[in-house]
Length: 171
Ligand code: AR6
Image 1 (cartoon, rainbow, N blue to C red):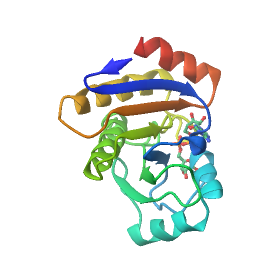
Image 2 (cartoon, rainbow, N blue to C red; image 1 turned 135 degrees about the vertical axis):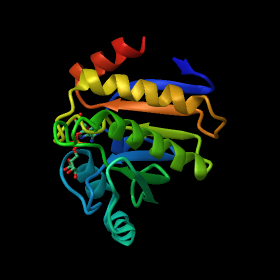
Image 3 (cartoon, helix red, strand yellow; image 1 turned 120 degrees about the horizontal axis):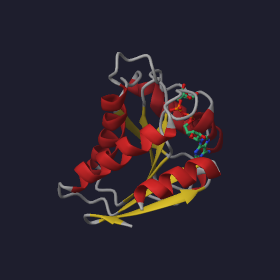
Image 4 (cartoon, rainbow, N blue to C red; image 1 turned 60 degrees about the horizontal axis):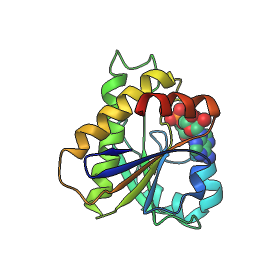
């Protein structure tokens, strides 16, 4: 489907295999690695990513930082931090929206064209997928209203259940 000038692809898969300009990591405030997508990216991408992450000295929730992609087939990794569900005084929605929006803005600052996102916060951080998908779509729609270099956004889901929820909501 298309939103403005941007092609949106909803796909099942492993984000570390994406051959795009940037993949987004669902990191934590330390940017020093963890489980889930974060673990998979650092494991497959190798130590060059962690080295550059250390130089950023962490990342506040909702913001985004960029590093090399190490051994991954993409060009950059954009590390963002989503909210822990139920722990942010009802600020979750804004923080999740900011995580997507700031990742897209950072990609556009680097003149990137294609970017792949995992479903941020919906694993260890417990954000319900059906609530998260509404925020994701709204963030992309709002971002698409401004001129940018971004032409392709891939939303990568790791389970059939999440894939179906995203597919149904975006149709
Ligand atoms: N490719 C695509 N999606 C994946 C992959 C993968 N390789 N692996 C998991 N997912 P999570 P969060 C899905 O927990 O909720 C880390 O420890 C997964 O099914 O990775 O933002 C960080 O260091 C889920 O739907 O991220 C933080 O401490 C989604 O990605 C914390 O987890 C996000 O799950 C962040 O938690």
